[in-house]
Length: 235
Image 1 (cartoon, rainbow, N blue to C red):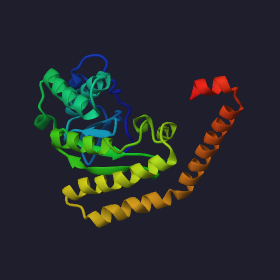
Image 2 (cartoon, rainbow, N blue to C red; image 1 turned 120 degrees about the vertical axis):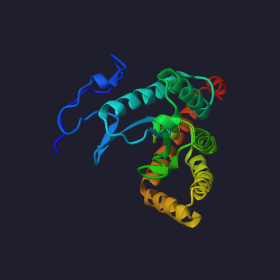
Image 3 (tube, rainbow, N blue to C red; image 1 turned 135 degrees about the vertical axis):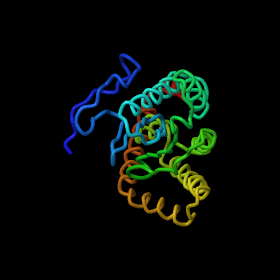
């Protein structure tokens, strides 16, 4: 069916989503999916996809979305602590604000890894239904992710050299396999799929490494060309 135009879920105005009347067979509402007669809300935060349970009524899905938006708002505005710590505090605060529980909302989480130097596209974890479990998994993965990776798939190259990214990759794939095995996956299959994605991205990785080395050499040439006093100040 051709989707009918509907209101945009931007979180502005009345928090009563039921006031938005349904027209046509479905609404095209940002961050709400519609499939086989059911609506579902989803938002992204850092390396996470937060999603709610499937519901029949659009008004219910909009109410669920408002709760997710509060979680993202509080987690984003909090500047102190790790991602997992900020998420835990944000979930508790948002649920209390909206008078909801994790069970009522059907709140679940999926970790999404994107790092263009390693592979093209995304790698998805299992679905976590426990906040404690997903926070534990995030803590494990965060330790091996490149600096700057949260700001985008290519930004890690700003602070990390190709050799550093390669070392982090070797750590990441083992830790990622551990998480997937805990959910019932076969370790050899997980590692084989990761390696397939990594190998398929070899051409891009080689090009990035050449550019990085060229910039490094240019910086070195510039430093050597400076007067001795200025060069010492920049070391």
